[in-house]
Structure formats: structure tokens, C-alpha cells
Image (cartoon, rainbow, N blue to C red; front, side, top):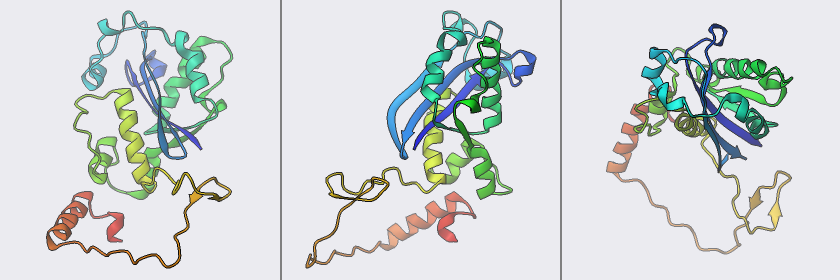
Length: 230
């Protein structure tokens, strides 16, 4: 399964008021494993950025003057996301801006969902943690994801953080392959290594009192709805 974790930064909050995308950041996952195949572009929006937006992402009008237009990267961006599942936090915001940009090109690109499917992690988080804050920062705190480098928002950084949060939201396992050299594979291609009969018993190492205390502190930090307390 190919998934693209995506985030955008914009000149303001509403494309219907003429606001545009100024940054696209994406990271690719295949079978829940990050591949290192990123897509990242800063874009000249051909309009001023609202100060409230600058206060969020820190991208200035001057910085974008020599950057490409969305029209310059539209084809390569579509090729990158085509056929994938987009994983986005608060997807209607980003998808609304993307659809607006495709529409402005007037080249028959259609809308985002003509090319890929969309999964909204904000909806997922609200279902899992009803009544709680489910912003990306709140989820980082709840799941112990380090976002200390996130002083300002940035599309690529936010995508990388969201990828880690998404994996934890959906179970945390990033690589299903147990043995790349195994001859035994299931229909999904997952390798299985069979243990030899008569092997020595595995040593059991129990957690110390200090480790158990540290474990409890970690669970407390994750909140009352921590899955390990259910």
C-alpha cells in the first residue's frame, strides 16, 4: 500500500477569498515503511500573505518571490500523488486548497480525489479520543512524539511528524517483514521465519522496580485514555 503523508502552508485560511498554497510537503510510505521519497516545494502565490499566516508558518513574501508557481509543479505533483492514499490532518483544509489550485489551472485536472483517496487523521483521532484536543501538537504529546524542532509550522516537517503519529494511531508497526531471507511467505508477501525445534529456552528478563516506575510515568503522560490501560 502506497501512502503519501501531506501538508500544505497557505497565504490565509480560505481559498474562496483568493488565498493560495505557498508550500507543499509530502513523505512517502509503502507498506507502512517510510521510503525517503519526499516531495517538497515552496511556491510563489502571486499575492500577499496575511500576517496571521506568517505568524504560524514564518514564510515571508520576500522569500517566495523567486519560487516557482503552482502551475510549474502541478504535473510533477500529480504524478507523485497519483494512485496513492493521502494521509492528511484536517484533510478538508488542504484538499480544498489543492482543488482550488487545480481549478485555477483550467487544464482539466479535476479534483484531488480523481487521482487518489484521502484519509483524515483528525477524524480518526476524534473517533479514538472523543472530547479531547486532537491537534497535531496534542497528538504528539499524547503519543510521546518529539516535535521539539517544531517552533513554527512547516509543511515537510509537519508531514514527517504526522507520519510518526499516524503509525502510532494505527498500531505503531512500521515493517511487517520478519525475515527478508525466509522462503516462507504469505499471500501478502510477509516473510515468516520458523524457529528450530529443540532450540534453547529464551531468557526471561523482568523489568526492575525502577523500570516499572518509569513505565507508569510514561503511561500517565499519555493521558487517561491510553490504550495500554484499557
